[in-house]
Structures are given as structure tokens and as C-alpha cells.
Length: 218
Image 1: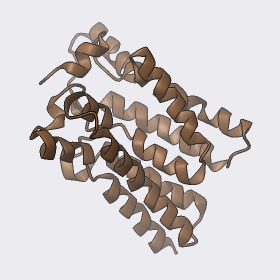
Image 2: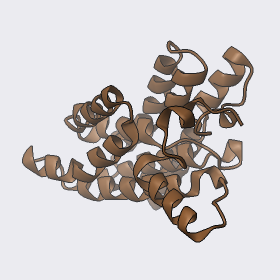
Image 3: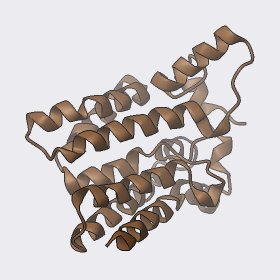
């Protein structure tokens, strides 16, 4: 059974590594999405730099590539933690895809795929935070808040206890990816470096202006 569990987790990572946003950039506009805006291989950059309509097939695929290994694990009779671990591996693959030398996205779409299977109430919870962030013009802090407070919501609706550690793991992965920022260099000056690190954690960018950040071209 442990071999099957390892194979499922590996499958999750390889599926998660499929960079649908990057492929959309190449196929639709012939660009490398990593050279635009935040430099992330993400649905938000597809929306900003490729085509609004393209976010739907990209987003659906990114949700399903994490939902599938979780669903498969449950169908195979594996434990819920192992099945969720396969979904978490898909998130890791999305953030650090082997096919793009580990330069990927932020993992929120595959995260939605996991909770869609194991905690459906978490899906509208996170979408609400995304929508508020979109309406206010800056989704990054709201996405992080949704993740941080997800365990409280989970307890309120008597959801599965395993969601607590999954949400905590997702917070750690999100902050780690924001700080790593696809290996984007940090300023040399200490005060500025500290400022940039804090901006990355809370706002997922290096500068004050959100619009300038998402519209830049490297």
C-alpha cells in the first residue's frame, strides 16, 4: 500500500507540474508568461497578459489536475491524509514545476481542486476572498487571509479535521513561494531588502504599486 501511496503522490506532483498558463501564453500569443507582470505562471497573469477568456480553460485545468489525484486516492481506498498529500504534491508541482525548471505559479487553483473534493464548503469560502480582493484591486492579501482563517471556518461548519493541517501547509507553501518568487533577486540594501520581503509575504510583489507590478514587462 505504501508503494501505491508514493506513486499517487508522485503522480500528483507530475500532474501539478503541467504549466497550463505557460502553455496558454505560448499557444495563444507566443510569449513566455514569466517575462510579464509578476513573472508567475498563473491564471492572474493569463488574465492580464494573454486573454480574459483563457483564464477559464487554464483555471479549470489547474483545479482538476489537483482534484484528480485526491479523487483517485479515495477511489483506491487510500486514507484521506494520503489522498490530500497527493493533492498537496500537485500544489508543489504547480509552484515548482519540473518542466519549467521549478519556476511556476502560486498554487491557489490546484488548492481549490483539493478542497473541492474533501471540503466543498471551502471552495465558496476561498472564492469569496478572491472576489473581495479583486473588487478592491489587490487579491494577494485577501487570498492569504482566506487560507489563514480557513481552519476557523472549517471548525464552524464541522468540516474534516484533516483540513486544518492542509490549510496550514498551504499557508507555508504560499509564503515560501512568495518569498522565493521564482528566484527573483533581492535588493542589496538591508532596509530595502526587508521591505521587499514583507511586501512579498503580504502583497506578493516587490514594489508599492499593484498596477505597475502586474503590467510590467521584463
